[in-house]
Structure formats: structure tokens, C-alpha cells
Image 1 (cartoon, rainbow, N blue to C red):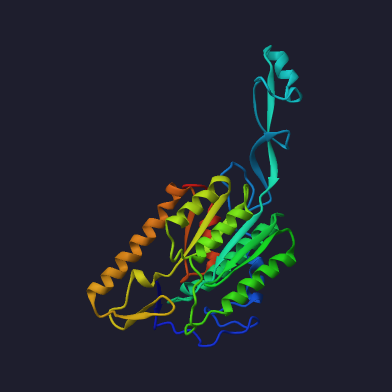
Image 2 (image 1 turned 180 degrees about the vertical axis):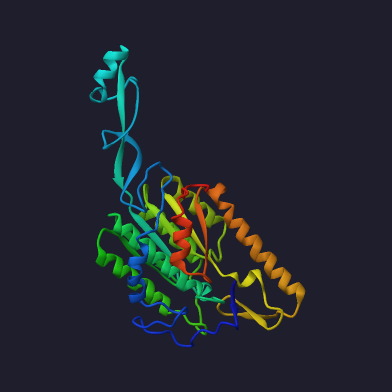
Length: 330
């Protein structure tokens, strides 16, 4: 179900892709302009290394790469070319030098632009925050020399762009995000095409078989056991970061007015004058957030709550660039 507040009335007609309505729609030019603000973001993969968001990343595969990892005793099957003859001569036992291969880590950015994201009570709608977060991560990835691709989905379709190492490709991805963002409207008649979040994650699993950075920008509306299975499957061979977009409205509901609950077709109005209604909604929102934060340990994904009420770049810089490792279970 989607919650829509009358306190935040969106325009009845979607804006053109080249224009912006502050906090309600975001233009492609606005997303392109975030390039300069992405320079200080840091995303650390679960495998030990000291690089930024992307670029050259340590692989699980050991071989004759560029980064020395350790010196250890020779084991049957080791490549004789890795024997360190000086150490072997001193110790009179064969030792080998072990290296960590370096390899690219393409980024696949999954962006939710469904009608449930068309809600916000303060700075911006969740759909705008998700678009901004996706743009910042895309620019950071490209800056580090890795390929960037994306899956942008609404209630009816999923648009795919395969990872490329090209600035023009990032701009095209941002244009796609902006186009879907501008298609949202509060009075639109939504015809939902099944579990779109699961459909996007399933497609991501088919694109990113292993060693990808997968960033999912969504509020996880409509998630199910299937959603959890897909995230677990993705995290098995990739680094998965869930940017969980939320709005603080439900943590402190107004004591008057009305809240409209809709599935895109039917809707019901809840009067906020009822303390029991307020308590039920707040408890539901809190339990839902706690459940998804538990995915850190249960599914092995990194979950980062991202508020639509605060500046997106500042939040990501604080959460991802604070110096603490952003790893599975963190």
C-alpha cells in the first residue's frame, strides 16, 4: 500500500524532462550537476582494500596479480613460479609469495520510481531522493574508472542499461531516471505490473553474475520473502548496498488532518485525530524499518537508511565516507 499525505500536494501534471519542481521532480540536468558532489563519497567493498567506491578492487581469486598479500609455505599444487627463493634458502623450506588479483568491479544501480516513491513531507519526495542517490553513486563509480549500468523501474516497466565505462552512458542513465521521475503524478491511474521490485532484482541477478557492486535505491514497498531471497542470491557473489529511502513523517504523525492510503486504484482516508490510528501507523512503520535493518545480518547486504527530509549528498558523505567500512553486516 502507498501512503500519500495531503500535506504535500504534488502537481497534477508531470513536468517536462528539462524542468524541475523543487523536491517534487528532478531534471536530468540536476542529476548531471551532482557529479562534483560525488567526489568525496566512499564505498568500501567487503574484501580488504583501500580504494574508493570503485576502480581496482581485490578479488577472491588468488594469482599472479599486482598486490602482494602474504608469504607462506609451499603447498602441493602451488605455481612454482611463485616460490620466493631467498626466503626458501634462508629457511630451508619452500615458501611462496601470494598475490591478490586486481579486477574491475562494475556497478549496477537499481532505481525505484514507482508511485509509492511519490511521497514526501519535508525536503523532497522519496522518488527524488532515490534519483539523487543513484546519480551520486553513478558519478563516483565512473570517477574511479569502473563501468556503470542501471535498472530503472516504475509500476509498469523496467528499463535496463548495461554497465559501460563512459560518461555519455551515465548521462543516458540519468536521463532515463529523470524521464521516469517526471512520469509520476499524484492523480495518475496506476496499473501495476505485478511485483516490480522483485522483477528488477531478478533482472539484476541475471546481469550481475559475480563481482559487481549492486546499489538498490528504494523504499522496499511491497517486499516479500521472494525479495529477501533475491537479495540473498545477489549478495552471495556481489557487494549489495540497499539505500533504504524513507520519510520521517510516520515517526511523528500530526494530531489532526487526514492521511490517504492507496494502492493506486482504491484509497481510504485515515483521520489523524484518532490516537489509536496514529499509534498503529507509527508502530507499523517502526516494525517495518526494524525488519529491513535486520537484513544486514540475515541476508548479508549493507542497509543504509536514507531520509528524504535531508540533503542526499550530505547523508551519503556522512554514511559512506565516515571512514568506517561499509561491509556486509555493518
